[in-house]
Image (cartoon, rainbow, N blue to C red):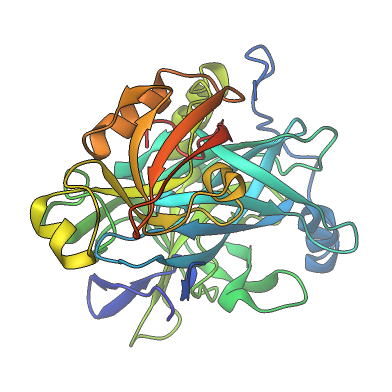
Length: 366
């Protein structure tokens, strides 16, 4: 299914989020270098603009596990982003990567490359995430100034609309309104960030450039090829109405993430539930406490080592595991790359121990 959620303004509007389908079973930044904020002058045409910026507009794909899924079900989302530093700093929307078990950044053809990404900073309330990939010499897009925008000014939106194959989609329009505030229904958002499932966007640019599912996180550009907004929402029932977060509101968060990136966090790649007598009875488990493995990150550390959905984790490195919280505590006490011994009880009651090499968590604290 496509992840399209309603927004309230004057009609039905949708977070242009990521295009998401349901599937089964599926870095260190140099603090000295600032974000580029000046352009290279006005481009000769929209074609020239697109040729200049297109290599820096990336596809952001996530493997996710959403609350309420059991039995190894998960989701896959596709959004957009753009590179702001040649050493691999990428900006996107937070809702594109929330709940991610794996984040993959893919550069466009003809030199497409896949990179594993992690969140180094951002602001969930502002729907902004800053990613880091292990790249060098990557093409970038300069950040412009949204304060200089005028009503009626031409703008160009680029992003991976509808997850269509063949590269990003380019649309053009004008600035229709400035400094809008809109409210979106986003059931996947943390209630602490989105009370009652509502996400509020402030300092928003309205444009008639088409913004569709999959565009989220892509750049809205002026005709100098500078980012003036981050595409976030498109109209549902209404036509020719799209919204982008003003880049001036996002710059402090982007620069803070670059100057003080979140440290890498160790990662096991499992989604677990507390084993209770009721759960043990429901699934026919041989133990009455531990951490039941409800889902695994595809090709993640645990799955690669041989952990399976339906196993119960009862110990890690000899430390007893009584529930899900204990798994997180033990894993976070290690560093990425550490090897840990994970003791498991299979549904048939057999026990085994596997050695897992911990990876890097795509989210700073998840």
